[in-house]
Image 1 (tube, rainbow over the protein chains, first blue to last red):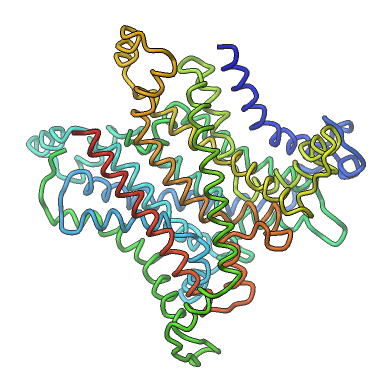
Image 2 (cartoon, rainbow over the protein chains, first blue to last red; image 1 turned 135 degrees about the vertical axis):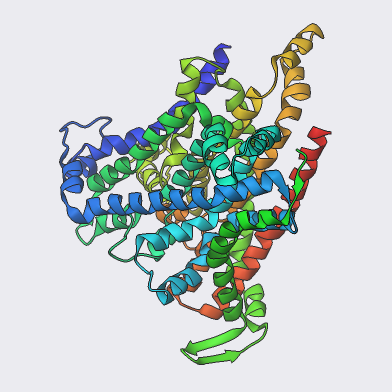
Length: 265
Length: 291
């Protein structure tokens, strides 16, 4: 028993130390960072955070990231909900093939799609817009959303649908007012996953944008300059990208484990 | 569940189909198109047949990247799956400690991938990073991941373990919580020890989630790009250049459309074949459970 807790503590230490180190560095001046190793900030400073939160070219990165993540989550959920319902309730021509084909898109390496996406969105005049990144992220988020939602929907007995139809509900009314409240948790978990995968992805987001919709991850690379690395600002920017994740985890913590099992345990 | 036969259900699937078709089929067709032509400029394309495929399959760069990729994916699977199961077993089952553990474990998953790279880039540095400093000064090993390829490898593997073991933990944790108490009571009556409970109750019940975990970890580790790109830039030399990075180098770095497209198709087919096998095993195992 004691060994078990010791192992857990060691593991959590391993998880948290690198993050602590990032936070620690973000509160130091660059002089302190490069002049020697200190376990906690000797001259506590918030200057790095002030730089980011007051410089428009920095904080616009966060806003851009939030916009495309929100768009992606909304689009993914809207199209995935009816599709997942169809997969969980009906048998139709090509349903299994369709499902597998959707999953293959989750398996496609983003690197394969980067170049064609770049050209496709340029042709449609969508290059460097938020919607371009949101649509590109749909490639892996929509299949995932369908997969998770289908798992949750299959857990709702079909008698509920039938009773509602007998009671004279039309399909849209049934779906919006009876069915969706039943799978609230599933929708929440799915939104969490869409948020997560869109928030952490950078390769596509970086390739499809240049100025107007540039994500924070791409802006972070500019801390490398001729004058050397601006470690403090880099660390502060990193810490600020972790914050939304922490908030989201906190809200879904009780459903998360189930969601990770994709409703299929 | 008994399903109704109705092809009208296609109407519900149509939006997903159109959206994914727009962002998957059109780009894939472009890739196929490029892979069989030599493109000099707009309107100047020559049919080259399977020339690019042959060139890519002969390419030393691709083979090297492929071998490194396979070794990498195998290494992290061998470490992450048992470690993930062990941590999930050790985690408290209820109460506030359970919630806290879940939040902590999930933390690395919500960090953007380039920031994961940055965290480890800083942490593992000998001069300003705690990890690098500890290994160098406390353990007296001349550790430098930017110069020594073995050190770079170890750093990338440790980073991936840090980043993705939580996914395995959460999956296994969910699987463990789904085992009814009656199973454990029966085991206690039979006088089964800790090991026997694990071997004959927990492990078989985890089979389904473990397959998902292996599938996801295999797929994602096979596509890894951002983290090693930030951490080592694929170096030193090509020591940590994996398939995606090699591809981006050809496609966006050198803008060699034909070879890059041929490479993409080969790459995608490898993942697809492997995933197809996994998927079929998964479906079969799922059926076995229900029967």
